[in-house]
Image 1 (cartoon, rainbow, N blue to C red):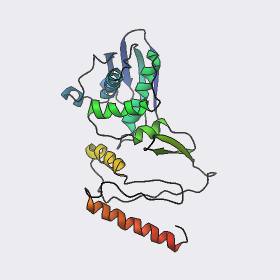
Image 2 (tube, one colour):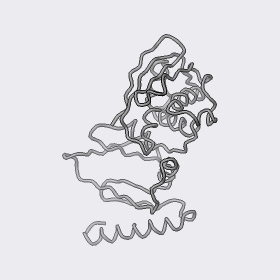
Image 3 (cartoon, rainbow, N blue to C red):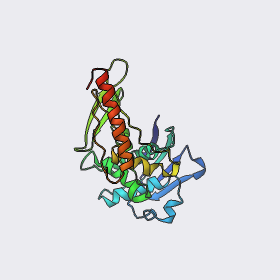
Image 4 (cartoon, rainbow, N blue to C red):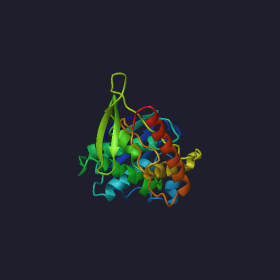
Length: 239
């Protein structure tokens, strides 16, 4: 699955974008620099389709001292399935990277591409997403699983595939019902922040869930599951 685009500088101060996935929306055009887009989280933004993301990328870049100065023409197409943040996260990353290249700009830190992409969602469109999808998309490598440590924002890679060493994934059922699509962004962000799902190299370690006092029922459920995992590990000779 991928999101692809082809772009060409046009020698003006205007960005012209066309989405193959949303042809009825026509060409989205705006002047660069952050001043020609709707105000963040405004009613006008709420009524937009995918155009809210290029508008948001231009706004966030300008707000962070990296205003785009050069326009370009681009055609965008993708086949990432819906239901989560992956489509918009991929689009935001591509738009920001393209804008940086065309305008000859550089980020102070590589991880700023994640922060900027999240800001498009959080600050401009008003979607309360975390950073996990952006991280997994930007840092992905063929044949590798990506391990992110939020404590120091470090990235490590885990070989996957037929020739990779054995490893395990531990997933905990939070007891939540699958939310409707319009609420999924908020629930996914809360799950990431709360540490509801963890993945690790064997032997697995399950960290204590945070905010136990705020969600006692869920935490009791996690503790029950945690005890069951350790009991099975002891029965099979693993700890």
